Structures are given as C-alpha cells and as structure tokens.
Length: 101
Image (cartoon, rainbow, N blue to C red; front, top):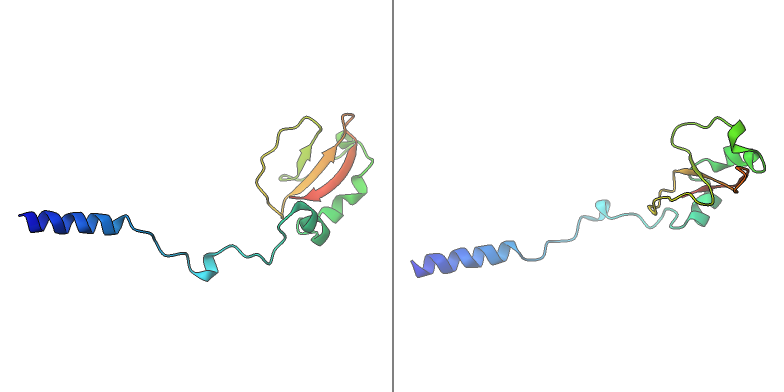
C-alpha cells in the first residue's frame, strides 16, 4: 500500500514539472516591428493612406471601423498591434499624427 502511495506521489510531482518550450513556429517572430516608430516607418497598418488628415478636423472625417482616434485625455490599452491605425488629435480635435501601434 505504501509503495502504491509513493508511486502516486511521484506521478503527481512529475505532472507539476516544467513543460517544454513551444515549438519554434509558435514562438513570436522578432522579424516584425517591435515599436510604434518601427511599425509606422514600415507602414504595417496602412497609416500612409490617412496622412492627408494631419491638420484636419477629425469631426469632418468618416473613418472605417477599427481605426482608433486618440485625444489628449483618451485612455487607451497598451497592447502593441502593428496592424492598427491610430489617429492622434489635439484638444481641438485637429489630427496631429497617424501612427501604427
């Protein structure tokens, strides 16, 4: 009986051991942009299509779904998505920049 309990304890401990790292194809690639500056420079989100908005009022523009408008007091998530278009505005709603992050 003790041997059976000892074997069960060893199996339970083995199950709690470290797992192997994911295969190489599941590991995030370092080849893509790692910062907003890099993503914008590489135009990974297509921000260049909106560059003509800089200096315009955001109220006069219709934007597609998924484009994020960020005002000076807007709270945004900190997740990095190089495929997301972000349009920054000043306190008057004038577009100051278009970036990818």
